[in-house]
Length: 248
Image (tube, rainbow, N blue to C red; front, top):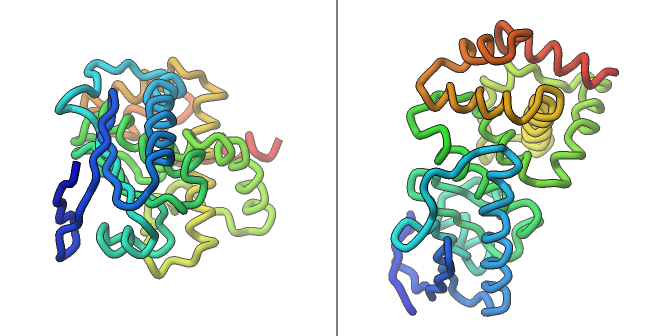
């Protein structure tokens, strides 16, 4: 099926539509076997990510509620039409339940796809009004990338040793853009993944879900941190315990 979708660009583009159980995949010249692989992996992550985080899905993605994946032919089309930074490989719009990416995106199936789905599933759980630090939300998305999840601690330890480490308060003030140095970008994502991994592995999935549920109910981030993780009165305490853990 051919659709016209103007997106963020000036000119409408032609899209072929491929429907599956929980997703509608839009593509242009990507071969059908690639699209079917996207379907297979997206369906797998649909269940896997909720299990990783311990979330309960209260509403399924079916019929008109299916998520949409737009696969551009190349990075240039993706960046130009979705208005992303040149280093971006994928983008998610959780409110619209849409993902935009391209086949040659770095680690398409192992990184880009689970990362962007992680954004959507997390926001589906906590809602769109919740005020959350960017590092926390990006950390949850990074946690879905298995290689990044397990490699993040080592990357942050190297940053601690070299003096390049940024505290969580500093991460909260960091704004990534097309002009940001790639080393700063990589460290931001590594630290975000590392601290989420620390919270889930050291304090348990059940407590993490409790924390996210309180955020969903409208409680402030730091107040919730203090009420669920009693050792952390604020983000600074979380930062200190995380660094101690990494230095062991």
